[in-house]
Length: 164
Image 1 (cartoon, helix red, strand yellow):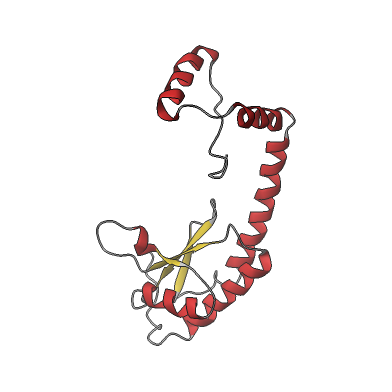
Image 2 (tube, rainbow, N blue to C red):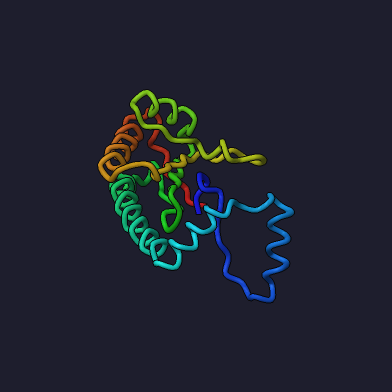
């Protein structure tokens, strides 16, 4: 469900129930009964479905606000991974340095991660990971505008983005 609750649910055949319960107990000892009952109550009343629909609409608005000023940055950058999740990836032109842009944006109050932070082998990608889960649409829009301004003001940013 969420890392804070540390629980979830699974729909499975009743024939699999004994094996699933045993596996769960072996993995972490199970979950407290009050948490299980609360989750069951929320599922049975449709509250989880309503919550998921609300948060999907909310996050779609925030994503749209963030990406509004970032979609037309070619040849400087290209957005990717905007179809799902709570992050988008801004792939940079080859001559742009993701680490340097991350530092410059942090100085302006925009906190992002270079994609290289998540790379274990091979060439480090020049891309930025932009998370928006905890933002309002106004905050996301302001961040997107600052990213676009910073990219346009970067020396040596005339190299075109080459999509792989």
